[in-house]
Length: 214
Image (cartoon, rainbow, N blue to C red; front, side, top):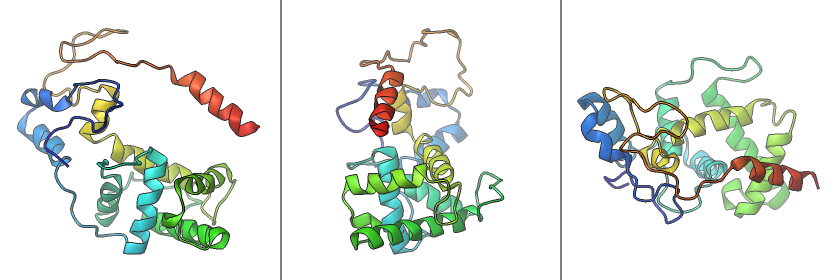
């Protein structure tokens, strides 16, 4: 991870935009919290090496992070679980979050080994996606009926807390103490950038769902 918040890669929707350009408007506490997210992640404390291999592959597929550098989603989740920082609730049909993650990683490895003779992390990308789609559409999987919701809740929270993800969606970062004044549809603040390649996601999503039903 570098000191810049600029989104890695060439296919960006807000080229040249870097939310860290707004850091002079943040107070010291806010600045410290945001900049710490660009520092090298700490060593893992909750998951085993085998669980790490499975979990990293899982979140790479869920979030489309196929190349380095990547937002350190897995490290954030590991740190939360090591410190017991959950969302303060869990479904009564599910175990506690940490146990659910560990059981789900074991389940992915079990399914991959029984069908392909290899751990989940060693499957190619498309076979991983195929297995995950079976999990997503199952009524219950390995006695974990809400595992998809757990994965996505933790994964998205970790991903969209990172400045690279903010740049990807054109988010201006913390509003404190700066605030916003140009409220309304399609009204931009002076520091905001217009999207270079605007795309309505609804037709794309409808096309994907149509292909799944064929």
